[in-house]
Structures are given as structure tokens and as C-alpha cells.
Amino acid sequence: MPELPEVETVRRVLHERYRGRTITAVAVGKPTFYRAPPLAAIRALTGGVIAGFRRRGKYLLADLEGRGCVVFHLGMSGRLTVGEESPHVRFQFWVGEEAVRFHDARRFGRVGCALPQLGPEPMDAAFDADYLRGVLRGRSASVKALLMDQRLVAGLGNIYASEALHRARVRPARAGKSLSRTETAALADACREVLRQGVELGGATLDDESFLDPLGRPGRMQERVKVYGRAACGTCGGPLRDTRRPIGGRSSLHCPACQR
Image (cartoon, rainbow, N blue to C red; front, side):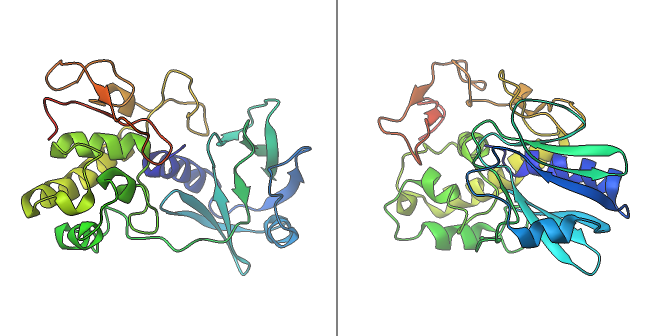
């Protein structure tokens, strides 16, 4: 699933390319997403002037002059592209002669959805060691599950939560309440750092190339990961282990030597 850095990379491309321009046409694919775009979103987009694109967590928001905003979510496998064709186009809009296409093989993406309640993002001023300590305090859920709960912390998914925990030297399956103040402060810093690096490097493009930016360019964060998708730890070179049980339905690789 695209996480904060990938969605921010998409936002920057679309904002730079289309701000101030008019959406000339909209088309819904057949089949479209499992939850079809509402008519209100189609009407808002059609003929709308794009004031800009914003992002909140993993959600992309298209601001339209005098028409509010339309919220996009890329789901598990969605991509927004400029002009690229595929059998999985579920939605598209045109700016002049240029088509922006929403490809989604698994059809879990959304156009025109409501923006849910989201916690602060790790790069927000509201997210600090004290805030994270409040999130973790008294909770027996795993620290990784808490980091990926968008109601508590917006923007982190499996890749960046795994990397942040490695940087902070914390095992993903530990109960949130078990972290010390020092560990919590290190983890808050690691969450910020890993997301900033992901944004700077244009997101992570894995072997399946499920993420490319709208112009088809890969990110480079995958070159810097220490545990995600690796067989050996990128810090010490030792073997990685998965947790005995998936966390949030996902595998959770960690280094037993580096993470405690």
C-alpha cells in the first residue's frame, strides 16, 4: 500500500503539473472500484479548476476553486499516472488533452471518499515524544500495530513502521506500554526521519514496481531500507526474523540482534 512518502510524491507531481488548470472531462471505468465514485465527486471534478493538491496521511486531496475538494485514496495497489494505459484503469480525468488515470488491479482505491479521522503525522509539530508516549501508555497492543493505526499516527504503513522501529532498535511485537521514555523518544525521532528520507527519495519502488510516480519514475527509498524486504539486516548483516504472528495482517521483519 502506498504510504505517506509515495502519496506525497504523487501530490508534488500533480500539483506542479496541473495547478490552475481546468478538468475538461471525467470517465468512470467498467468495472470501477468496489465502491464507485459518488456522483457529487464526478460533478465537482467535471469542469473544475484545480486550485492545487494537498495530502493528509495517505490521502490525496484535489482542491477545486469554488467546489471544495475531492479525496482520493490509492488503496492497496492504486497508481495515478499521466497518460499510461493498462487493463486496470478504474477512473480517469482529462486536463486539456492529457489524461490522468487511476489504475487499481485490486479495486480497493477510492475517489470522492470522506476523509476519516486521522492522527497527527510524524512530521507535524503535534507529533513528539510526549504525544507518542501518550499513544503507547497503558496499551498492550504491539508497538507496530499502534504506529500503523491511522487514527493515532497518520501516514505510516508496513514499510516505514518497520524501518522506524529498526532505527529506534525496538522489536515490532513489543507491547506499546513496555517502551521506556528513552525508547519512545528515539522512536518518535525515527518515525520523522524515515518519512523525511522517504519523501526526499521519492518513495519506495519495490521489485514488483507497484509504485512509480505519475510520470513513471521509480523512487529510491528501497535502496536505503534496513529490514523491509531484505534477507539480512542492513545494519549488522545478521539474519532477519518475522514475528510469530502477523501484525496488522502484515509480516514484520526485524533484526533480533539490533532490535530489543
